[in-house]
Length: 263
Ligand code: KIV
Ligand code: NA
Image 1 (cartoon, rainbow, N blue to C red):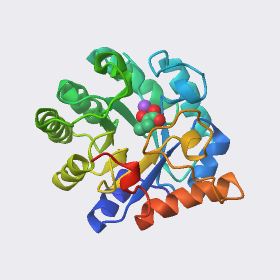
Image 2 (image 1 turned 180 degrees about the vertical axis):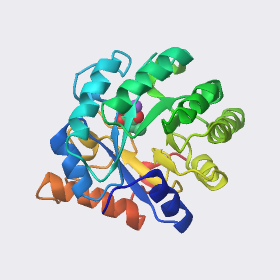
Image 3 (image 1 turned 60 degrees about the vertical axis):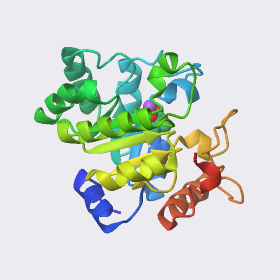
């Protein structure tokens, strides 16, 4: 597919072509994700759950993210490598700059942060210093204790309005991408249409510019999976086939369907 950059993703959005993101935490799976044709790889702090066996992403540390980012980068995937900034690694501008630098030096090509308006100064500072940013809104798992559980966000008119305002703010601050997690389909579709930057959905319906799933979820390996997950190993003979099936389903619009989405 050739090396993917932010401008590839912008062009795909402009052309109405869906792109794909899959999480990976090591070199072998990073290679398989790239070979399957997913334009982006997320080294997610979901590694806290699926690799470390933690109950949430909160215990994940910057050292863990840097280590797994290095492992992924060694595969030299064509996919753009996005690495999650873990819990409280971007609480202050100073921490944000030095921790983001660690991930970039580990081989990330973009960093991801959970939050909206309160992050806009940090986002512009990162971009000014050469670090592209993906923001993450909706159900932001690092805030699970504030939400009181993993709940769909943006269901009331007031919270939907605030997510839209956050999305516009992070775009204005210079973010290159936005992940929207567990929000109603109509809200995610509206935000994707209003923003110039590509929006990657997870549990956000079919109207976003791209889709992401956690590798272990789409391979049917996770114990508890939310409504939006589909097991792509079904009817496939290999992990490679399952990854290709997910990529094909997103690109053709076959996934996600209404049954994977929130009304
Ligand atoms: O950590 C992760 O895997 C994520 C995705 C689910 C968006 O943030
Ligand atoms: Na994450």
